[in-house]
Length: 165
Figure 1: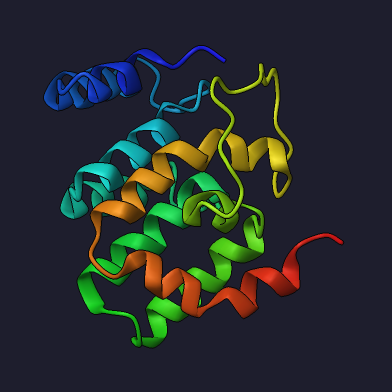
Figure 2: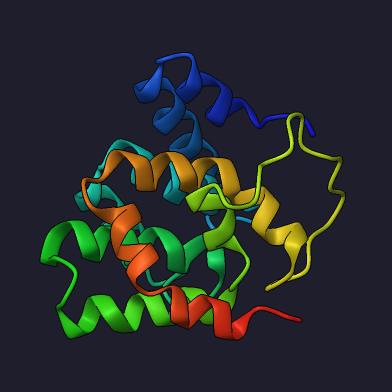
């Protein structure tokens, strides 16, 4: 699967260029039919840019989106800001897991992320195809936040119970 240009820029150490490209795309297409907001949310999470992520999540056009692309970065942001026991943090993680219970296995490394990723022409919410699209950026983001992986592991009962058998 080809990596999108903003993610490639970010991975090359050109974070500001990656953010600028996403923001330029969103200005050109405010309703964002291409999903740039999801890429940007993941990049902000990877960079620990919580204020920018919060502004993005609160944009009136996007704030009603309840997808894994939104909920996992939001849960991580709240964890980084409030710690593991705040009720809002626990609710945010529960929502993220409700959206896709397969992603934690990739984040924690118990399920390997294919390299290269298979070609994914479309994804299904809550399915492995969606988890694969989020796996690498969210694994990186969780690794950058101290204690986040342990927090996710501590809530394994939430995601293990939701996985399809």
